[in-house]
Length: 199
Image 1 (cartoon, one colour):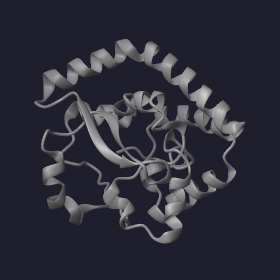
Image 2 (cartoon, helix red, strand yellow; image 1 turned 30 degrees about the vertical axis):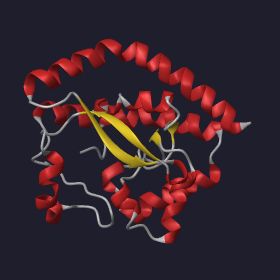
Image 3 (cartoon, helix red, strand yellow; image 1 turned 135 degrees about the horizontal axis):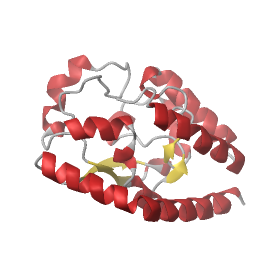
Image 4 (tube, helix red, strand yellow; image 1 turned 180 degrees about the vertical axis):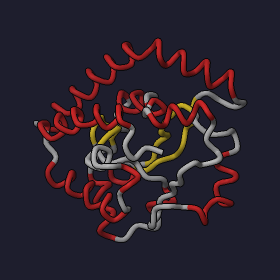
């Protein structure tokens, strides 16, 4: 019953959000196009439920060649483990910095939700390279469909160590329910407004 209710809820909310956010998304697309060269939408291969790969969509918040220069910034990674995050990332554009702070860059993932590749609530989808470095217990976070938000998103995001982040995802996998999803969606609102842990 829960998977069916979750899917219906995902489709209804994602479709409604896309309609409501359409004017904002058009404005964001224009700002990205006018302020930096490159595509408006950035698609990156991610790993979803049970290891299935898909193209996750985001508004482009970095320079056109961000992926190319990433290796040169590896030494500045601020989170131990198979993830890459740094404050004041030089690849981020001025507009991109605003989009990331407010999580607006993730709005195109509503399309991933409609396609069934993601859910509104679930562990954030890792890259294939990150999954290759996982320990066996960390693979449990792939036992739920990836989402736009989860416990990690509402608990400090980038301020949380990777192992603790994964433990939160495993906790979600073990306890997931419609009411937990609803609670996490409501807690996401103040987390996005304050931008706590986002960079």
